[in-house]
Image (tube, rainbow over all chains, first blue to last red; front, side):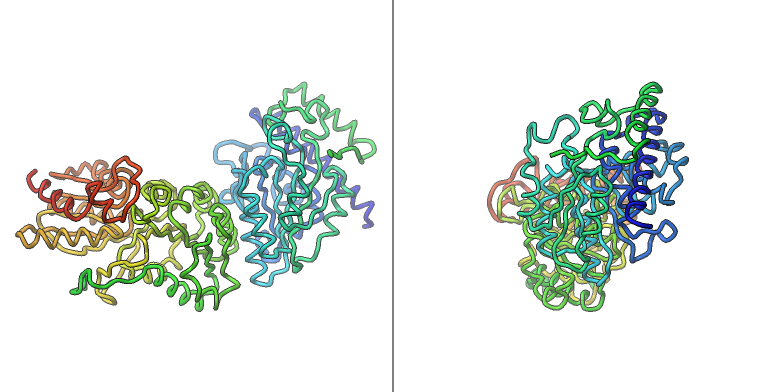
Length: 291
Length: 319
């Protein structure tokens, strides 16, 4: 498959993921973290369907790439991206999400859901765990990578920067941080109170190889994943993916009210129409840069 | 077996025993990783011979616990050596959510238990047992005799789930038991001294003090038993119930807040089982930030030194 076809395939998957997310958000009956799900959707599709070496039929393969969802509230987006890859059953996710004894909860739980590498949900924890996994791989001479998807808001947590320092100090070229830089926290925009900018410079100052990209442009995401240094190189890489919270649904995009929520039947219809207008025709949308 | 005839005369650095033991284990078991947030002075041998499994993260307790969780998820057995207040409070949420929630075999060895740090209330550790005992899946251990550390660390390599191991200063610890005569089993208390009239339960450095008080009272014809409850969680319930049944008079002595530690664990058990001792006294740190001084001075000031222990035993005998 040539690159263009591959990108078109991934775009179609991301469209499907968004539709499935919205459907769940309209039927679950409780709040879903839909804003941050939609900002991370393209990244998660690119990781699970292109960039990472994972096998739904051999989930404990020692050679697999490891993925940590540090922004654990994006769990349902990860579940569905994984379901589209064959890890889980989408209908089961929809039928049981958030219900008693379900493996599919608001935040990923490794104990209940094999295939998830670690439980997460408390923000700022994932990168340290990823450093531990990357150290182990390096010491054992394993060739896989460890990917860690963070929200930009959670990088207010000091522990992220403790981990960032350790990762470059221990020369973890097998570690890839990805920041979903959607510019929003739960109740404000990232530069309203606490300034993350100059953001890329911060990561560089902490010793990371840094790549900025449009996190909704599949060609750019694929190019960034293709350009990752070899796992046995000596510098961790961070992908700063500029994204839009609520991406694809006009009334959700950059709206503080849509950090989490449930869609009424009418809103669901409206949202699906929005998606179709954006993704249904050209399949490519190119204005997601958030600089 | 039991208390050494040289009782209280020999000292050993607990930290040295930790360093030696981790080195011994590390040479034989390549699953062992040793991590520290800048408190690894005793770990030189391990670092020298197992350097690719040694991690010093600088002064960053949250990070060291997260990294340990990541290592454990990959099948390794990480041991963290740090200072108790920072491991159990700064990194409390990482210990709970990254380690205990996932039931990972991370071992946290902390020094500076109770009021022994000599650093004041920032560095004292009076809440750690309460905090760590409240975490689901966590095993909580408090060691007095420095030689015990070797056996516990070896045993910990095969013990499931997370573990917190508390030491006092770990610099000049009193040898209590005759070396090589003891078998330590996690979850089983040690009868350090038999006694018929009163039983003192203690852990960590306070076992020595309890024995000191017991021998003094023995000379007056009062028979005082001492139980070294080095595993606080899971509690050796049978041993507690047997002791209460046999003497009915209990003193609990610990270098920790009086409420939330071993005394609370014991009293909870007794209430749950509707077993009511004739007398029950707890000795430990009251609701204060203790300030400066040596451990011995502070224990005297706050009423749980050897003198206070002797007094407490006399009082429960009158009930």
